[in-house]
Image (cartoon, rainbow, N blue to C red):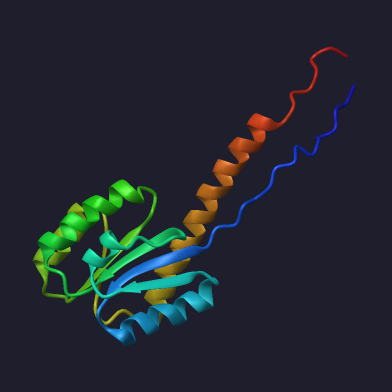
Length: 158
């Protein structure tokens, strides 16, 4: 007997996907926002500093964190540690100047990518596109696991 797949009544809950950015430069935040519009329709949640993210977490599903504020390397390292605990699957990018080796090392120790200012439009689109594609793959794998667990097993007898 051939069994048909049954509709198991799984509903997909849509969460608002967002990029969290700590940035004190409005032009840089606007550039990231324009790149986000080209890649996806998610939200850009901007904070003036990394410390603000710790105090006021966003309500949406975070798919990328960008630290581009005036924070010192020690603050960035501490913030990255917290973010890795809070959003373990989320990519993080730190933006700084080309000669700031201490900030670059703090970013790398914290598992973040390091981008040198000025960040090109193409680089923004690549980073944001990667974050959204990565999120889609993780979500798909998680949902397939749920569906497989809920799907009835076919009978072994003929």
